[in-house]
Length: 286
Image 1 (cartoon, helix red, strand yellow):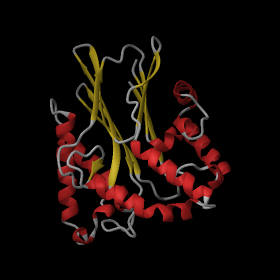
Image 2: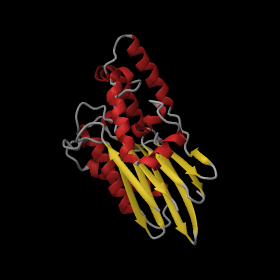
Image 3: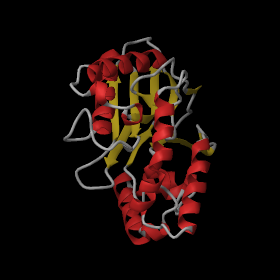
């Protein structure tokens, strides 16, 4: 088993993504988290790295504490979220933070269980990270073809603002803040959250999948910032992206992404942000 991973911030010194790898006896856990960019007017928890970065790192640290043989992924996520919430409630400004300021994140967790000569892969997904499986026998498969219904709403609003002459990404985001804050508050108070959030009002509602990956399988797990190479800029197909990552490495691919974003600028952006944090993990099973 070979694991390559990276997490690259869209701006120097700031990154709301995180990748963590945990290894145990016969079990490997790969966790990719995409922190939702803050829509608050300030940070309430961590003024240095920011509330969102605090959240994703605190969650992965808590997850490492609760991992145990035989414990389900859902149980582990719930337990880790509880630890993070307790830490948040002990901060001095927790009570002052409105619901739209509570951090959220997309989470995809791939567990590889190798027991008795057999290999089993279990996928646990909250939010819009992307997981691709490549095998010599079946080519490339999107294991979690999730489409966020909110994307259509955002695209329509971006199109309206661009038609009104607002093409600068910073100005566009300011115009969209009321919508973004209402959405964030809703996500943080849902009775069945489909995103990793700070104060879940009920059990998380993940998308789960278990499969036998087969021989020579390759998994590519990535945040939507990295997946822009496919769905935003159209530079690669799914299989083309996996093959390029295998041949050229993740570092080279994120360099290509940043080069394209810099060249396109705001004029080429049909998203809220002209550039996004980008993270990915490549797993090669031999």
